[in-house]
Image (cartoon, rainbow, N blue to C red):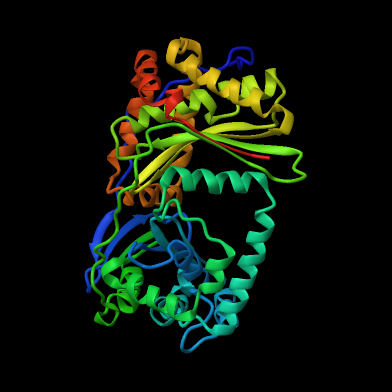
Length: 424
């Protein structure tokens, strides 16, 4: 058989994607456990997921600092002892938070899991935020913030989010005063409300025999980790319907950072999947219209992109780039020209097929392997979505038309609904 090295192989979007959902169980205290099994590696990953309580003051600063401090010391172990023990067993432990949830992730070989879980148990149940460690973390974060506030892109992002989301946890931007006001009791109070069995979900991924489930139940399924269910996990974002423009002077800046965008629907809305496709055409990949225009044709920037940001209680659309100070007005003009083009002209068949092929490849890559699949499901949990979402995404990519995308552009991408932040 002679290989055809001239013509590229045909590409087709899969008709059906049948991802196995997780095995759903509960620990003795009611914590839901979602298990994704694969015996290809002698490795297990545990994700402990906690919803945020928006009644906790100073969010999200307390949230982010709380996650950082979680493994900085317990009643029985210091930060150094925790780190050394995790390293000794060849494990990887990560703590982190988003605007909607806090997550603790452990990777461990199966043979060391029984040794690692008691450490994680201490971190979740007995973290005490030692004063010396808190002082170190706060000073480090203040220095990091001071450095970032010299960067025009950081300033534009902070100001844009503040404009879009208002006085809500999504719009909150920490400053030095907030760091100075943090005390240890803030974090201890945060732990007592957030890290409880009533607010926890667990995802198990990898080689997880029944003995693994029993181990998790042993350390986290008891009644000693109870707590009241959260009642303030949602809020309303003020609606800003009129366009606004802000220019922020940054002395000696040779570059300016531009953000143009608006409040937008989130992942639960019926239009969101199609909007993702429309956004990809505009500025969601390297071959997008914004990149072709502002980078390749006009030479105004090294990179420009657009994105949809989705959170549990809202979302946003934005275009962002950096350009020379003298080119800011021209760059803004070209952004609005591309938005107008999407409203007034239907996307050509060839361009739409290119974007569909790109997106279908990205979706398939996002679920390539059992660990990627579990991460995909973890991302859906925030919105109460299930595994059917992936099939709906692929169906939308396969079937969406230029007419539908043109209608969406006229519904969501009107110039007079956009907000501008220019820093430079």
